[in-house]
Image (tube, rainbow, N blue to C red; front, side, top):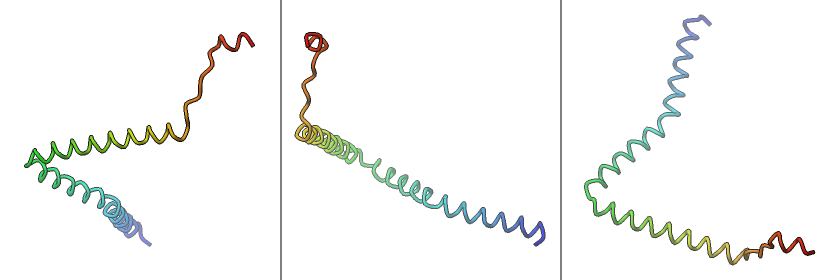
Length: 86
């Protein structure tokens, strides 16, 4: 194989790899931008979505705290002064 053919082959393989790896993030970026433009035209949707997201997040954190308390009750800690008298 001549060096010119190897160089052309290397460029083609590099271009195919770039298309393969860069394609999904570019499609996701275009989709996200389109969604942002669509949602930005109606501010009331953003406020409602933010309130719902904050409520769901708070509920998840509250439930996780309750589950942890039911599973593992907190241990009573002993002070250093209690150990001195033993």
